[in-house]
Amino acid sequence: MGRLQGFETDAVVRSARAVFWERGFEEASLPELESATGVGRSSLYHAFGSKRGLFDAAVQSYLDEVVRPRLAPLVSGAVSSGALEAYFGGLRGALADAASISARSGCLLLNAAGAPIARDDAVREEIADYRAELLAAMRAGAAARWPGASSAWRAQQADVLVSLLVAALVLARVDSAQSVATVDAALALVRTPHAS
Image 1 (cartoon, helix red, strand yellow):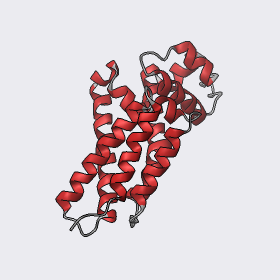
Image 2 (image 1 turned 90 degrees about the vertical axis):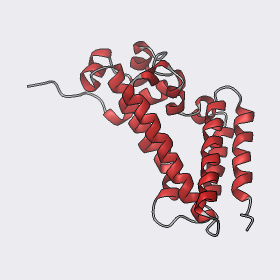
Image 3 (image 1 turned 120 degrees about the horizontal axis):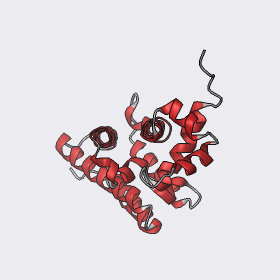
């Protein structure tokens, strides 16, 4: 009979997620992952198969616990006209809070997009899916915010909002003030009524 796993998988994945988020896949060392998770290398490999398997679990955790809860008001049920403003307001709060991992490290997936791991087909596909998920949420929010506007105009606004969102999250690692200012630009756009 195999040995029982002596740790809580979700907690280990969350701890590893923080390391990958702050350091990136390539820079996150196994000793750092062992220290952060409190789990030895052999147990990590037994549970996740490899460092890459642990990274994949961390990405899924990031999507399920960080990204999708924040996007939920933009994608589930009837989207309110204030959903975009609430989304960007919440993001602004996270990016303005120096203690927040979002403020220090931006976005786990966008960080991966700029790293060598993005050359991997599965990671590249995950990043493309993430962008598509963001765009769908922004389009739903734009439709609720500007119901009288043409679908082409709303789609254009959604594209701009995704671009501002990506820029803000990338800037978070290097210039927190500019990151927040970029979210402020998105908020200004969201607060602008559609000119008929």
